Length: 179
Image (cartoon, rainbow, N blue to C red; front, side, top):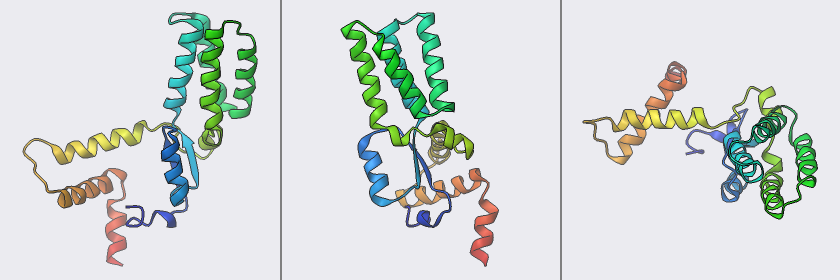
């Protein structure tokens, strides 16, 4: 589909992924995007797991740590957050808590190049995949609504039309075709 919509000709090619190495490899192999980011939700999910392991479920200290770390990642970037994680891990004495810290730090280190939230925010790019996932649900719901039947070729065409409409590019698309 990237060839069909001439993705490689786009001025801005930005992608968010869940951080799975195989997905990242596909994006890099095909050169689909110039700027690849880690979906903030997935970073947050991994920080939450570490918080629960180190501080427990209901710790207010853990909640503050979580909010501060996520704020640092989002507004100050990877390097500052990494320094904070390193210092935090150094204060942990329990082997179980250190293991949780190590797991989080390994997750973050493996995705360093994708943790670019300050840059993404500066360019007004999304840092979370929620809007895209919501649009996918909405578009598919419109095509799959009760009483509607499509073969695969026509379903794809209907979804493309729905996406054109929802993106606000309906008129531009048809104007470009007329030229």
